[in-house]
Every structure is written in C-alpha cells, then in structure tokens.
Figure 1 (cartoon, rainbow, N blue to C red):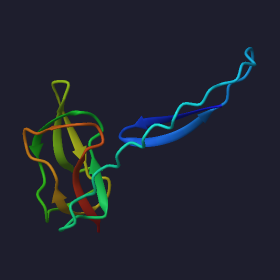
Figure 2: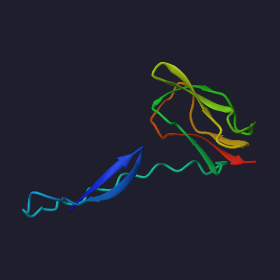
Figure 3: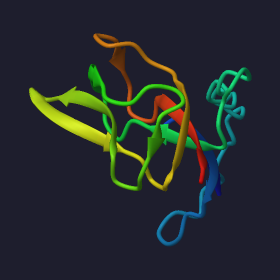
Length: 120
C-alpha cells in the first residue's frame, strides 16, 4: 500500500492505494508529505455565510455587485476574464452581498474567494 496526498482545487486529500497483481516485492514507505496549507478564511468583519468562489483562474474584470446589495439567485456578482472571455460569477442563492474580497484587475486562482453573502 502507498499513501499519497492529492490536492484538488486547493483542498488536500490523503489517499491510500493498494497494489494488486504481479510483484510480491516489499514496498518501502516514504515519509508522509506535509499537509497542504488550508485556504485562508474569509475576513471576519462583515463576512457572510455563503462563499462565492472562482471556478477558474483568471483576472477580475468587473465587480457587478457591491457589499450590501440584494441579489437574486443567478444575478452576476463578479465578472472574470478567463482565457480572453468574460465569465460571470453569479449568486448561488437569493440574499445580500456581505463582502467583496477582490478588486478589479486582480489575478486570481481557481477556488479563490471572490465574495460572501447571506441568504435571504
């Protein structure tokens, strides 16, 4: 058996893989890899319970909603430029935008926290 740490969209998963078949030679175990750093928490001041995260790496093209704005599910909150295309990031639920965590022109990675909101 071998242990691996796999990181997907910034989240670390420890997995164990069992080898089957051909070889009966003993498998030496390597030291465990250090756990991936956890994502930074949303700012405490005014942060909402619903996180709006980037689905892909890109650049923040436009902030479409400001903190305090009421939005409906599907309303655009932030517009990203991903591979030369404008890609809207929308509110997942009806509610109020509590914080905008990025600025226009900022480069971001997939999974980056863009905004927070509270459900209505």
